[in-house]
Amino acid sequence: QVQLVESGGGLVQAGGSLRLSCAASGLSFSIYHMGWFRQAPGKEREFVAAISWSGGSTYSANSVKGRFTISRDNAKNTVFLQMNSLKPEDTAVYYCAAVRPRYSSYTGERAGDYEYWGQGTQVTVPS
Image (cartoon, rainbow, N blue to C red):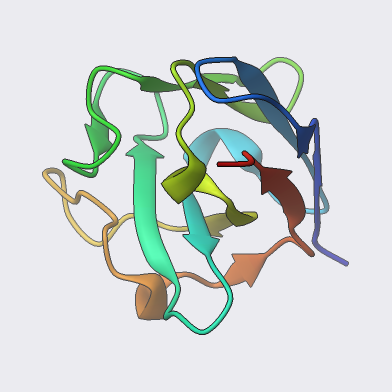
């Protein structure tokens, strides 16, 4: 059974940092493209960042470029999202997800492509 378990969310003041982790089990983690998405109340789920199976390629939404960094440790079956300079508009439930890449230049920006999802972790940045 595939499980993706996020952790590291919480309440942080604007300008602060958080590091989210997503521990995967039940799948061959090192062949999966991994993504982070978020969903704020009343809004659709949106792409945040993604990383290729090897970690050699990363992709980020424009809204988080220069502030958030995605990384992975295939030896530990874990993907991370380092979030710096947090803003109130970053408040959302953050989800990690896994998908087998469709082709070599696959970016993984579409939520509908993903096969497995975690339960989410809340990030709150008060205004």
